[in-house]
Amino acid sequence: MAVLAALLAILMPVAQATSPASASPETVLAPDAEAHWVPFELTPHNQIRFAMTLNGHAASALLDTGLSDTVASIEFGEVAGLRPTVASQAEAIGGPVAIRWAASGQVEIGGLKRLGGRLALADLSALGGGTRSVDMLVGSDILSCCALEIDYDSRRFRILPTGRLPFRGEAAPLRLARETSTYVTELTLGGQRLRPLLVDTGDGSAVTLRRAAWSTTGLHAAELTSTIAFGLGGAIETDVSIVPALRVGGIDVGEVEVRIESDDGFSARIGAAGRIGSGLLLRYRVLLDPRAGRMVFAPGALVDAPPLRSTSGLLLAYEHGRLRVLHVMRNSPAAASGWTGGELICEADGRAIREAVTSEGLVDWAVGTPGRQLTLRLCDGSERRLTLQRFY
Image (cartoon, rainbow, N blue to C red; front, side):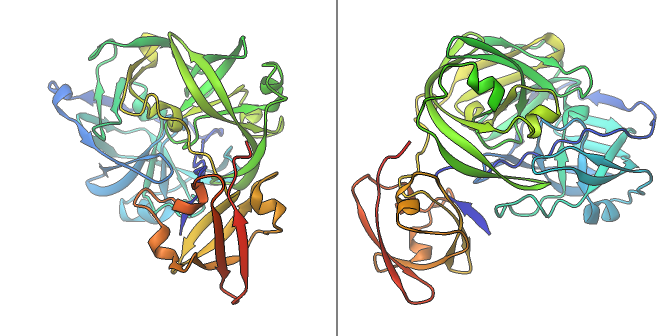
């Protein structure tokens, strides 16, 4: 199943739990680390999927700087010979998640090798909205030793010695949070300086703010609608708006999608004002180097690309040749037409559903030109008309 909508789902599990003491790992970078580029696939949810090894076993992994500790799926942990010990819980989008800790052995990613240390084991099947299964989520416990350069345009990243500056760009502050060792920065929106902001390559959205932070910006009267996000703890609903601009360090970012979550949500539980995700980062070539106190941005091919807006109000999942309605966005044409979650669509304007799904995982008509009229046939044989419009 894949989420096919204008607003792609957040997939950001963040482990933050008390765990047993473990021996300090040894991290080694190859002398020619600069040459060890790691190719990656950008998933429909804007996540970085790549190949690595754990204890000599090949793994499909997501690069997730929002994780305090690296996580392996329970199934892959068995394959890699991990022996779980102490049980605990971790904070995640959607709620707490049960984990178990294990000695990790040998991790290899590009020019980096880590020996020893620990990782968490968890059920990764809840990485919702249809992401193809992955074996591991690689967090800041492994990545923060070094500088991480992500070349989104070329779909590759590399791990470098801290302090290196492989390209020129505008800088913003970056540090490791004291309690979680995750990457944090700040941004300015509506003249307000908001911090700390988690920098999370595992979060497919652009910016997410807790409601208290959003209310300080003076933008709370902006046009809002609703969307959903998926995490290891399940799905959550948030408000969402498009802001004309915000500032991160030395760069002004134009037209950004901002999600607003409740003050008892994930950001609040980890003591953050919000999160910056890959939906913003992918506009740039990015260097994340918290031990040098900076992240660096150079414009990429998508630097001026506006965020996709739904014009239908339907967030959809493709399942076996049909579309299932995951969520009906508030104040949208779909909401006005009486659509509800769970309904199944089998045809759009006489076209089979599979013909409307793009290679990037979007339903083309769901983000179509305002004013277009659609005839949608539900799988129960009934038909409905829907007129697309801009509503946020």
